[in-house]
Amino acid sequence: MPKISVGRSDEDREEYGLEGTGIIGKHLVGENQEAHTANPVYFDLATPHVVGVFGKRGTGKSYSLGTLAEEIQASDLGDNLSTVIIDPMGIYWSMKHPNNRSISLLDDWDQKPEAMDAKVYIPEGKTDEMEEKEIPYDDTFTLNPGEFSAQEWSMAFKIDLNSERGILLERVLSNLEDRKGTDYSLDDIINTIKKFEFPKETKEGLINRFMSAKDWGVFGKESSIDKFTQRGELSVVDVSVFGELASGWSVRSLIVGLMAKRILRKRMTARRVEEIKEMDNIVENEMPITWMLIDEAHEFLPATGETPASGPLMKWVKIGREPGVSLVLATQQPAKLDPDALSQCDIILSHRLTAKQDINSLGEIMQSYMRHDIGHYIDALPDRAGTGLILDDNSERIYPIQMRPRKSWHAGGTPDAFEE
Ligand SMILES: Nc1ncnc2c1ncn2[C@@H]1O[C@H](COP(=O)(O)OP(=O)(O)O)[C@@H](O)[C@H]1O
Ligand SMILES: [Mg+2]
Image (cartoon, rainbow, N blue to C red; front, top):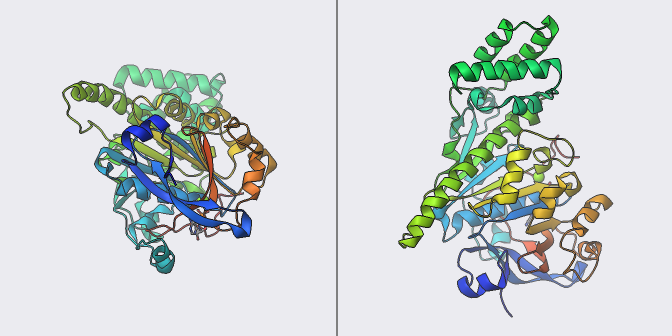
């Protein structure tokens, strides 16, 4: 039996074999109750991908995201990679612990519980809250307000740029930019708004938004987010603390948008240097190839509307191949994910889905090599945690899979306010 590898074209398979892959699970053979696990499924980590992880609530999306992160960490390419998990529910800190809950299950897979060397980052102003909740973290981060455009703020605040408030916002920011470049604080913004001759309500409305942004606890002098992409490291960016805020998803999107922009820019520069070095046969990369894993991705890259993260993430999706950035988007409702992003996924891991519109949205992509309707494949999956379908555009194949048990602790699976 030939080995199953996902994300690798036949040519790459011939040239590299299984180097730079990780085992994410086993091929499921047979249908429903009769299904049993067969050959391991290898997953390509060496080249950039856009991966969709789907499935209704409780079917294993967050768990599988963690499995992918574990494989990247364990990979023979580990030092040339870095992994960032965007964690809107605050569940991935548990990867620092071994999965002692599943010793016997792991044993069936010839695996042992293993703690990951993950670094958990939280917004600087939220340390008290995290300590209260007894959630461990390693370091904090801040964003520099001077790095956001009027358009990004307007998306975060849901202000129409053509409205009075929007116009004021643009003028204030361009005034600040002229005077200070990108070096200004929320207080500078608020003080500048006060100086403009605009109707009182317009000014107050805008000031209120920036006052509330102070409570987000994420703004500081500089954007200290470059530490998320260190060589060989797994960074968990815990953005769950904004859960109570009405504007929670806006803040999260500002963070993710800025990160995505920065990482892409740095990788594009690094790629040029690497190419020059490659000509001299030097193999270490300038900056690690970055994998960004986003849970609840439809909140950042929605089918309708735009967030401050939509543009930067779409750029990853569209041109990420060349500079070498990979994106993994997990959501329980693929139909709610930007359809352009969905159609650009070259690998899909779909756990069980039942909503017709979600099944249909999957059916629309990768049709050409499916022998049956997508619903047929999904119906044949046994009703067990961690089973799913892999649709691989690179090899043009479809595989039922049983995802492997996690080596590190998974803190999800408990009810939370975010899903459905
Ligand atoms: N591959 C797997 N092997 C064993 N158990 C799994 C697997 N995937 C998921 N589970 C179980 O299912 C539960 C729900 O998975 P989770 O990923 O949190 O769901 P969601 O799809 O809502 O993100 C997990 O807590 C775990 O107990
Ligand atoms: Mg989940």
